[in-house]
Length: 398
Ligand SMILES: Nc1ncnc2c1ncn2[C@@H]1O[C@H](COP(=O)(O)OP(=O)(O)O)[C@@H](O)[C@H]1O
Ligand SMILES: [Mg+2]
Image (cartoon, rainbow, N blue to C red; front, side, top):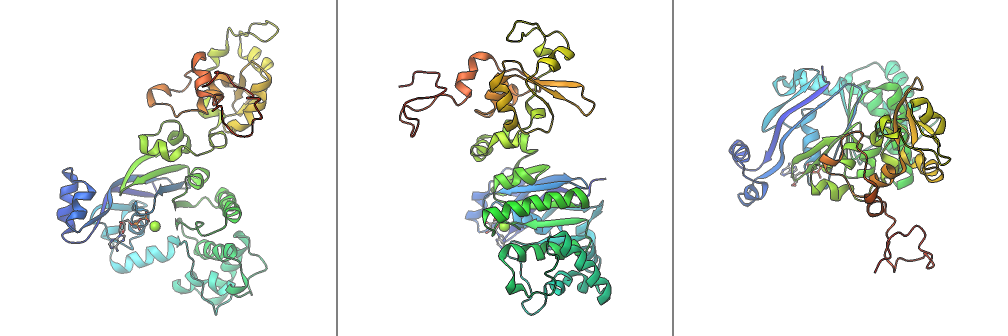
């Protein structure tokens, strides 16, 4: 069973919201409704989150992320649609049952985490347990463990104002972890932090997640953060989810121009993995090593490959081997069996334009003539700082 399931969720603010949902279902757009004074904050959102997944909702400010999140824990009632948590329809629970679920099974971490200034870090971390009515000794024990998990061991007796912004955010995380909730909802939890601290928190969340295997819905407007954290990423635009997929899906086969434009600045070399771009081993058979030996079997390919990597190797690690050898890099599974190859041309091709869905079937080999176009080796003649050397330049330019 999925941990969390959103089915055709709508949230409309303003007058006659159910009428507005009907109009949306019949093709009205958001702007029309706005003219009538209603805001369609979330339109027909459906997705499932499996236990142990990090599901990221990404979109610009105003795209409906927070509104969506608030429906996931019952803080806000959907105008239409339903939310199933462990198979249970949240919209059908009584107020008391909902409070129970919210205090024990779902935790929320916000962007600006409000700590109680006159309570110690430990008391702040234990707050959710106090709400649950746990005895002091028990809540202090669990809060201490959670603080340790969040990297705050030794700070439990401090006051919030003695902590940096990043550390205060960790207290927020500890508070959520202490309740032992299965589902963590994180709304721009790291967005207010400095870039370095933010990266640190992302790493720590991933590290924690390996051990705790919570189910996390993480909201961000930052694509790089989404790509680093998300097992699945839902891209929202103007209240609608326009694509759901892995970081690779979204980079390699964006659903539309909007998503493509959004992903333009992402460092593909760190997000894409060998597994996502590899071609079938067959494509290496019949090719030759620089000294003329023909590759006929998996064994030949493995012997000749400039590097052997696994599916999860980021492609940035393939550059050096690919640049020193004309032979494809070998991709192997846990048993060392050859499962794919990455020829240089393919590596260069995926760093260029996103592929259309038709171009992208697994194992597709990009034809050689496309390489110069897609490899990013063409440059403007007036590109700065190349000292006129134009290293790697292929076309003669203007
Ligand atoms: N309580 C509310 N009443 C009226 N409009 C709201 C309310 N909450 C959010 N909205 C509107 O819904 C849209 C989506 O907001 P929000 O979910 O906060 O987006 P995000 O979190 O992606 O920035 C915005 O146009 C916002 O102004
Ligand atoms: Mg928001």
